[in-house]
Image (cartoon, rainbow, N blue to C red; front, side, top):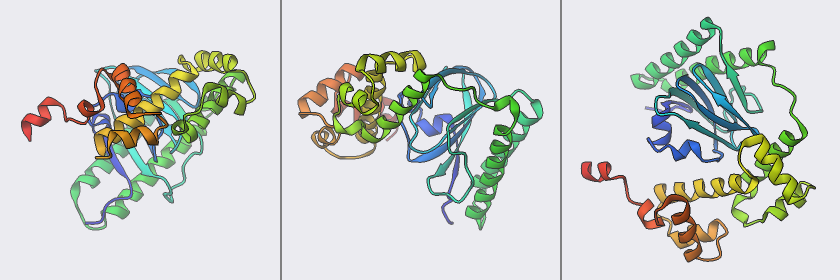
Length: 268
């Protein structure tokens, strides 16, 4: 069976039931369309923070910094599209609050149809999934074209925060200081910190730290690359400094983070 070019997953599948995989500020190599069907939370996207609720559609293009912190009762579905797909996609992140019941039911139905196809294992599954993805992205672009979903004009501080977030996705592993980031953005470190705090609820240093922490945890969980090499890749001066960083932010050492959760160990 041909591997589909795109997949549909639940939120828990996307994160492997580990909340930090969404709640830490990070970017991904693929595009995401997240359909939140129940529950509330907080979203950081495009250099801004906002609340989320039921029937929110969140589009996150590849390599855009975002974080989604959802409550335990939240649930939803995610369309994962690899970068480079031929499907027509928006170029910017968007959060849509879908209030019209027909539009809510339409997107839910499109996701359910794609899930059924994905699970069917029938021939030409890749082509069928691409067709389902095309219908979902048409729904998205139609909604974005509505007057009710035209985004508000950003303030100068929000634009600065968005520019900083974009730089973080490209330079987080280079051990740059806040002064380096501020100089590249032609502002002072203090102004950068204040702008990010006002726009996102987090300081510029917080956002950078979370992006580094996310990468470290992903590499520790999904590869066997030695911790000292991960430390070097992320710009740490020594493996010991990397270990202290991880213990401070997670209360676990790198070796402990490599171990599967206790329930998984018992099932192995």
